[in-house]
Amino acid sequence: MKHLSVRKQLGALVGTVVLVGAGGWIAGTQVHSPADAAAARNAPKAGPVTVGVQRQSLIATVVANGSIEFASPQPLSLAGSVGTAPSGGAADEGAEQRVTKAPVAGAKIKEGDVLMAVNGRPVLALSGQVPMYRTLGPGTAGDDVKQLQRALRRLGFEPGAISGNYGQGTAAAVTQWYTSKGYQAQQPGPDEQQQLGQLQQSVSSAQETLLTMTGSESTGGTRAAPRTDTDTDSGADSDSGTDSRTESGASTPATESSNAKEIRKLQLKSAQKSLDMANAALSTYQSTYGTKVPAGEAVFFPKLPVRLDKVTVKTGDSPAGQIGTVTGSELVVQAVVPGSDGELLRKGMAVELTTAGGEKARGTVSALGADAAPSPADDGGGQSTGEASRGSESESEPGADAETAAAGDPSAPVPLRISVPDPGPLAGQAGASVKVTIKIGASDGRVLTVPLAAIRTSADGKARVQVQRDSGVSDVQVTVGLSAAGLVEVKPADGALKQGDNVVVGK
Image (cartoon, rainbow, N blue to C red; front, side, top):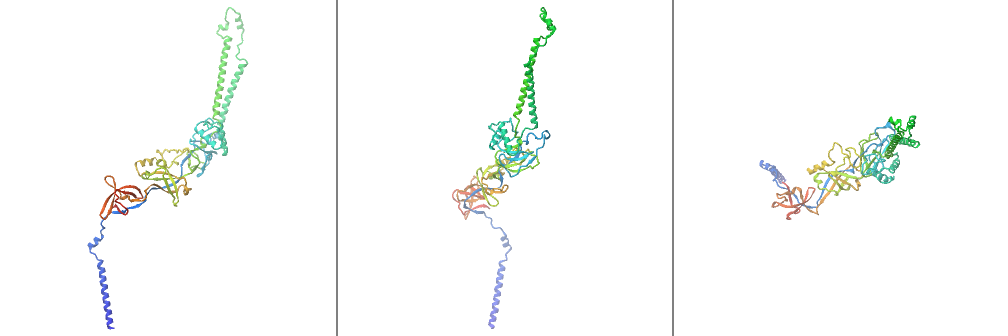
């Protein structure tokens, strides 16, 4: 038992010594001299930053954000007053025009439709390139009349010959067209009717005067003055050779009769001339008298149907100036890209459009630069004929600023318009944003690629990369190809570059 106790004490002593020794060793390893501590805090020796060469396919794209819009926005305004003669007569002259039925935003307008009503009269839509700029009626002629005649024929109202002359056939077709829409075509007003009556009365008066004079001539003509006793006595004096009236300077009966005939002839000629003039005035007025299309009652659009995108008037407003905006019914996407990207794009390039929900549609680049600049549809009024008016505050053409800036600054923004033949998931999303992706090129299969930062240009203008190997850093001349997503295709001049090599991108 005594030996067992001694052994236990000896084991405990040995364990204690071991523990103390281990603790001392650990403590010793954690203790550093000031020099060692300073050395540990120094940065490692600088070396080049490298990236591995990869072999892969490259697809170069231009990416931008776009907005879904309806195509061809144009301002809508009226070319003149609605109606040419107030039906109420002189008391209504100068009455202010008021919208009595406002246009409806979002409505689809077809040829022959009523856009709105002003003072109870319609404003009608027609297809044509010539803007409405005057009242069309009897006596007018020109391309705008021919355009009206063609539109009437398309609508099923036969105007007769498409001659460009507004005649009775055109007037009849206009009357039928208005009636089909529940309105009466514009007829001559009270003032016009009064003027026609006055001209007709002038003709009647001139005819009566001429007939009276002609009747007097036919029943007796000019009569010789009655002879007097003095004339008889003088005539008995055969020696004198002349009568006493001749001696005193008085005309003979024959002379007086001749003068009267000349006067009568002049009077008849004057009466006939008055009648001719009255008939000419009446004929001229009648040639312009009849059913008309007032300047404000028709709007010609280059292409129909159109969509009423915005409306700026309501019932009771005056229709002066711009009354709204119309667009085509097809969708387009408007976007803007930096000038450097714009230089890579061309009309006809395919476009991938991605909605916020991830749905995709296809489009095509249809316009670039100034041609794609948004239309100034909200900048002021102007007949809706595809030619927007220019406000006095803007001296330059739409898109001219972007085009001028791009000419001097490659990073200046360039407008871009994308047509969308099949809207698919974009339908009904006008005003929404989409991601625009345009593929501008692709590599020929899998190629060697390095970061753009690895490309250096030597004094002779040739491209090269620096390759780090065990023996150090060496220059390798390369030919640069397609670039995309920060990478560039390279072809080594002597094959001294392969996948897995490390190229220097920084130090």
